[in-house]
Length: 241
Image 1 (cartoon, one colour):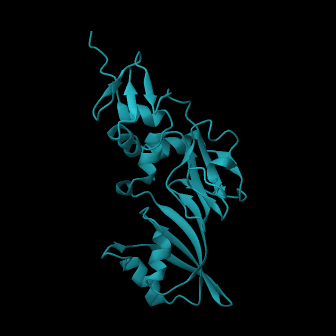
Image 2 (image 1 turned 30 degrees about the vertical axis):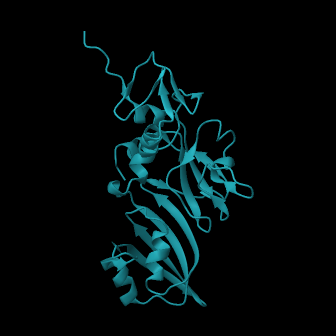
């Protein structure tokens, strides 16, 4: 009979709701993780009978939970408690107790769809740049956006440090002094859409994320949440994004 080799420590910690595997790797590197009576090292494996603690707290894999949240402006995608901060996970009852965290981040001035889970494996697949998960936004900018400018965004624009980002973009309508755009990107860089439009000297008035991979915001009201359908969880885990 072949002995069970156990589960890699970073995967085990991610299933405990402690974040992405990369974040869990960092915990191991910082020597915050103990397996039984020994400090864990990268490459360690955890078996069913092992006891794992992180910063002195016993951790066990959580029942997996998946939510869609319509993040209002003014909320942060962080689990850190700071005076005056309004956290996305607090929009879900017992969110912190369930070990929930946001998948990637929307900045405080951006609203719309945020995935919230305690499944580190799903978070890693969706948020990692190499996965190329599509993200859609409705953007309102000051002034008009010409055909040559939309063509530039499609070809790719420099967003700093020589890095080029591309988008699929459609002009929806111009109303008064602003223009609405539908934008699709395949990356998850910080402030990506804002930086792309800033490269064309366009000031963003509002930015709303309406889709991540196969998951659409739909008619979910700001501040509300819903359970993510199992078929969509499966699609995200199978990279059908």
